[in-house]
Image 1 (cartoon, helix red, strand yellow):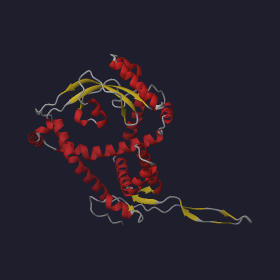
Image 2: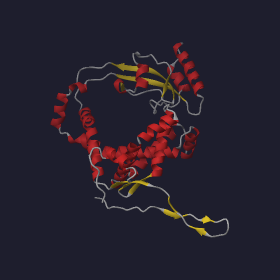
Image 3: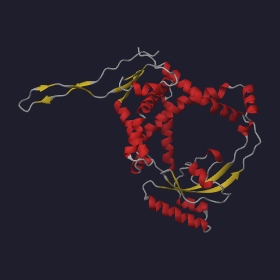
Image 4: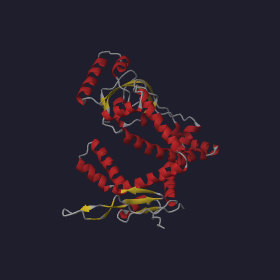
Length: 351
C-alpha cells in the first residue's frame, strides 16, 4: 500500500477595506475543491470543469446544440470523474515505471514529423499554423500526452503479457479450433485526393472538389490532379496519393461506403471526411476474400490478444485501484463510486 499523503485545503486571507478608514478584516475561502485524492495526486474541481467543457465542445462539433451537449455531459459526470481517476492512476504508473522520458520523446517526434510533412522549420511555426486553424497546440500536446501514457502503460502491463503468454501448443490448438478467423479477408489499396477545410471556405472547397471530379470523369489524370491539388492526406497522412493494403471490413463507414463495389481504376465521388475536408479516392488494387486458412503465429497471437484483452484490462485496472489509496469527496462519492468500483463491487475503505 502506498503511503497516504494528506492534503490540506488551501486557504488565503482576503482584505476587506472599509470606506471609512484603513481598517481591514480577513476572510477565508477555498481556492479549489478536491474531488478525489489518488495516492499522492488529486483530481480537482477545476480539472473536472475543464474536462467537462472539452466534452461539451466535442459534442457541439458533432452537431449537438450547447444545451443538448451540456445535458449529456452533466448526466455522465460520474463517468467523467471515474475516468479521470483511472487516468491519474495510469499516469502515476507510467512515472513509476520510468516511461515519462520515452513518452515525451515520442511526442517530440510526432511534432517533428508534422513539421516535416508541412515543410515547417520550427515548432513556433507549427504552433502558429495550428492556432490559425483554430487548434490550441498546448491542449493538443497535453491530450496526446495523456493518450500516449494510457496506451504505453496498457501495452506494457497488459497487451505484451497476453501476447507472449501462449506457448507453441496453445497457439497451434487455437488455430485449429478457429480456422475461420484466419482466412484471407477482402483487401483494397486506394489513392487519395484530399482538400482540407482548415483556413478555407468550406463551400469553396466542396466546389473545387466537384470541379476536380468532373475533370476525372472527363479523363483527367488522377495522379497529376492529386499532385497539383491534394493536401496531405487525412485518411493516409504519410502519403496523400497512395494507401497501403487495408482490410475492407476494418474500414470505417465513411470510407467503406464510398468505395463499395468500385473496381480497380474507378474512383469515388467527393465525400466529407468527418469535419476535416473532402476526399476523392481511386481504387488501385482489390483482392477478394478467401476461405482458405493460413497459419501465421503473429496473427494467432493477435487473435488471442483481442479475445482476452477486454477482461484482462479490467482486471489490471481493478488491481491498480486495489493497490492504491483512493478517497472520493463525499459530495461526489454516490455518483462516482458505483462506476469506478463496478468491477470490484465494493469501494476500497479509506484509511
